[in-house]
Image (cartoon, rainbow, N blue to C red; front, side, top):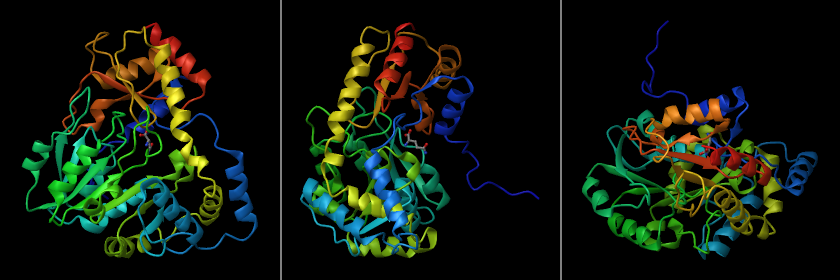
Length: 380
Ligand code: GLN
């Protein structure tokens, strides 16, 4: 039997490749973004408690109501905005499912979707699977700022969606208020859906404020705001996230979501709902990760890698152009195999594979891991 691939140009995701390579060579794994420390035992206890007290059957399709109420409260507290828990918030199997289902709900054959590159690697395959056309706009290193004139030029009558990601993976930059106002202006009076991937919303540094799409009324009216408990509570394997959108958009999303997963793991939802009653559990994250960023950067400040401190996410990009001319994919492999440290090459996030000699390192690691990693980087 022979079957044609629906994604003929897609290989295995770089996160799997680099983590496997790190494991095979016993390298320090700063590639795939996940913590090497556990989450709060209080949260695991609450999930166990939920499991032991009967939260083991289907949750409502939108998600456990207490969790939706907790999310609504959080959106109110952080962004002074209202999403109705009944029909404007849906709990998903990680942010990835939310993203996939949003694209699946709206993108049809030949619809155009604007994507800023370097882009998280799940966006484009999801667009293509639905017959859509990714239209890319390049964010230029080292600041990875958006050229809004370039975006305007790429808008057309076929533009169905714009996908943004702030704080931005992989670059560690953030959208400013002006960026969001530009986006709002460009999409005003259009039918364009904005998919705003905000999974690193709580990891934003140096006193900056996260510019969520929901802070801007007109933008909010066309946006899905996507976030993730996996990143926030240090349990990436739990696969639990959510999205918020105005009812008329969420109604359409639900038509697909109900047949996609129906609902996600119920006891985890109840446990997180209880845990979120204390907002400090997510509000303290910025300081926690800022310390890790600062530790990592202070340790490698005399290395031959060049950097601008990450403004958000738990990733730091390092420029190695002073060290070698090697293609970033090859260099990342060599660093893993020969030097014992794994990272992610940035070119894989560009459809044209443009290589600017930049690697992404995850600093969601124990201080000791960061110290050992820095020791290696300092010898290079
Ligand atoms: N979001 C994670 C990262 O950017 C990876 C997620 C995954 O492996 N699918 O590293």
